[in-house]
Length: 332
Ligand code: ATP
Ligand code: MG
Ligand code: FE
Image (cartoon, rainbow, N blue to C red; front, side):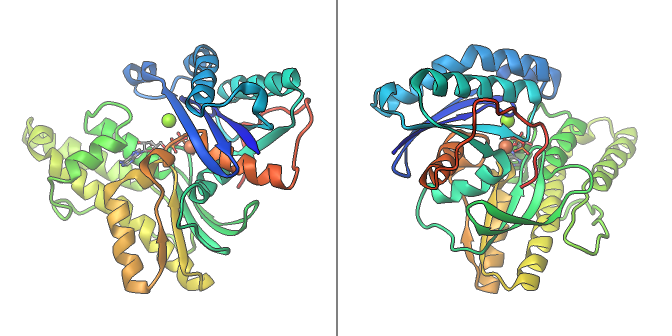
C-alpha cells in the first residue's frame, strides 16, 4: 500500500511517501521566518504552511517516483500543535482524500514521534519505554502496542526542548537554541557550573527552576565581568546540557526499574542532542538495555513518522470521516 503522510503541527511543513512500510521520500520545508522573533509566531506559521504545502507534497511524490493516483490513503497530523498550523495540513489531507476518493487517516503527533522507531531496523519490541523530548513535550511513555500507550510521567512546566531554547535565549544565542547549546557544549566543561536538580519524587519532570538558576547566575556574573558570556559560553552550555541530560536519564532509569522493561527508546527533537545520545548509550550498557535512538532526520518534526503511523492504521483500516477536525491538545 502507498501512504501519503502530511505534517504541519508547528513550523515544519513536511510530506512523505511510504510504500509497504518503507519510507521512499521525506521532504521537510522549515520556516526560517521565526528566527528573528525568537520563537514560532503562530499566524506566520499558518501562512508559511499554506505556501509550502503543495510544493512539498509534489516533491515528496516526485522523489518517491510514483504517480499521485497510486496513493492508497492519506495520513495527517491531527494534533497536538498550533491549531492554525494543523488546519492547513488537515484541510489539505481532507481535500486530497476527497478529490482522489481515498481513505483518510488521523495521526497523533506524539504517537508518531514514538512510531518513528518503526521506520528502520532494528525495531523495538513491545512493550518498550520511550522518552519523548521535544519543543512542546517531555514524556515517559510505556508503549504496549502501536496505538496503545500509557503516559508514566511528563513535565509539570517547561518541556526539555523549551529548557534548551529558553536557556539559549538567556545566553544570547539565536532561536532555536537547542542545537547551538549542543555545539558549544562539545568544547566545554560539564562540571564548570553547579546547577540545581528538581526534587520531584515520581516520574514527572520540572525544568523551570533550572532556567531561573541560569538567569540569576548569568546576571550575577555579568555584573562582575561584562565579557562573562563570551568567555564562558562553552562551559555554560556544557553545564546546562549536562544537567538537562542528567534529569532526563535519571527518570528514565527509574521508569525502567519500576516497569522491568529493557527496550528503551528516545524520540522527539531533543533526541538529536549528542549529550543525551551518548549518556543513554552509556546507561544502556550499564543496565543491559536494548537502546533505540532514531536517525537525526526522524528526531525533529517530519512526515515520515506520520506516514509510518498511517501505514499501521491502514493495515487495520482505521480511517476517519471527512468531518474530522484538528485538535490543539491531544494526549499520547
Ligand atoms: P512537539 O513535538 O512537542 O509538538 P516540536 O514539534 O516543536 O514540539 P520537535 O520538532 O520535535 O518539537 O523538536 C524541536 C526542539 O528540539 C527544539 O526545542 C530544539 O531546540 C530541540 N533540539 C533540536 N536539536 C537539538 C539538539 N541537538 N540539542 C538540544 N535540543 C535540540
Ligand atoms: Mg520545529
Ligand atoms: Fe514534534
